[in-house]
Image (cartoon, rainbow, N blue to C red; front, top):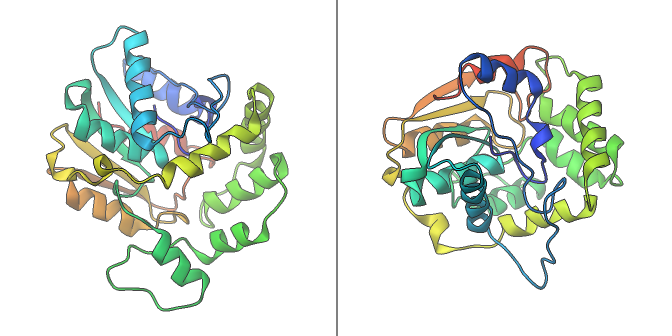
Length: 261
């Protein structure tokens, strides 16, 4: 399981892990660099890219003595999963990309147009929803309350938001972070352009599933549809009412059943 930007392994719900274990697999969750109990990096002295974060995943597999794995990534973790599918195909048994966008896609022009109230470019994938952009513009102080507010937006307006569970996870993450502020480095890594991010997704050979909510406020459904169209043979599973996170009762189990094994 490869989690998203600034997210620790504990952000992958226990209910999802339990459901996968019931399906007969070993589940590996880990903290990205600059999160949780993993190494904290001086980004100014040693900037890193998505490719470096992908190589961290390979190091985790190496540490467990595993030549390959079923790889499931969500959001930024989905981008990392795509990188692995393209650049380390022998390590990927199957690929599940959740709540993500095509690797190498630059969302900044669409975001800027949306924030300026300008019309969308027909070639753009859609920008985040107004609710998400309003949350970003509010510039809430960092902390659990701000994170809970973000997760409420991420949850979307259709399925109920399990605030107690989200709060418990976010408090746990804060308590186990060596340097909570370091996770912001992921945003810098995301904007570090590199040629390997523009390799064609058509080269992915692993059996692939795309799992995407129809209420995703960060990557609207068109992003998942574009991914499915770009990867040969990919299956698109649209989850009704799902936003960008799995913070609604029963949703982690529902998503676990869609992960490719």
